[in-house]
Length: 416
Image (cartoon, rainbow, N blue to C red; front, side, top):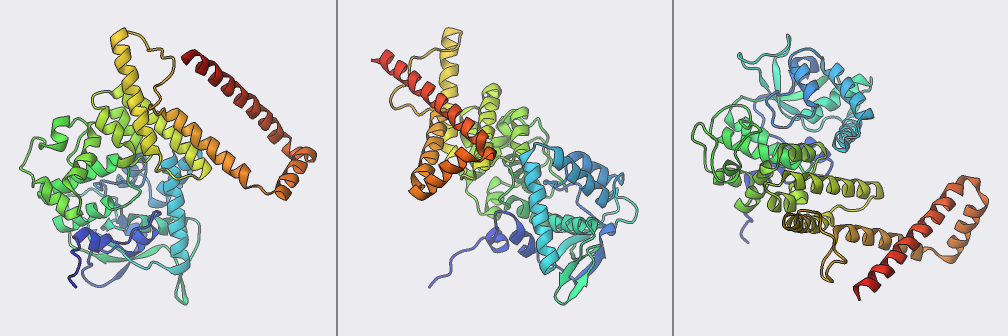
């Protein structure tokens, strides 16, 4: 039997879990030389990394030597506690999960570092820059901050030092670093788009960082090249990542969104697939992009609170985009917001779709209640003061349902 063809990216990153723990523990960039144990103080994250874990202000302060890793992490944790940024809170949860895994089982796969270059400006005493494994590095910093230890087999070791391989700096290492980031499932659409451009530049041997700025012309994102040195064809990037040209165009097209829209995508960790209807159909409409993204973010937050899957959001987003374009088209013709009696029978309102899903979910829950459970439930609601608020919520819900049904009856009679 012929062996299935496997790409470089599949070989290196074939097993990636949703939380990044397995990826952090197993991904390896073909280390050179013996394994070492290095003090955390001698290591820093790469300032030119296309994907920074720390918030930008803290990352810059760390690179400039204004903060130590411990101080930067302490500030990051404090920011996350008061932040409403879901992506930031998720990053901290994943970091704590990885740190707990390392504390219990040890660091299965060492990080990889390179010697700092002469031209790099780094704090005194820092001699190594991380190539891969920044999350593992910060997990050690977190364990050290919390005065925890690591169980390495039968030995208990301090987290102030970390196992590492030292690799030679160069295009191949940098390209590997970019590929590792791009293969992560938790990367947002803007990061992925900029990462593709950065990988293209790296494969072209242009520089050590992403050349992108926020003012790249939209015509250059998918088909052309920004002014500067000749770049390798996009096909070389697609081959390195084992992705299709069509998918690559989808991803890089994210950079055609307006600046405010890109900021929302990055801040809330939205994936390319989730925002694809917005990217494809709302080009040149920054106002509609913001409206669509804000609604999408509200839907996703509601789903996360309910513990529901996010896949149906794609269909809802498509319906939302169609509705926004319809309203905008009618407004362009009349000069005012259109007033419609009722949507066509075949029209799928995104709001109605979300409402239907919630109603069906609640109905399924109530239907599954057995009679003994239902009796116990009603008795508790009736006799326990702790649940008085629930009873009031039920009454409020009944009033709202009655109001909706009354309105439905009115609209139905008007449309006849």
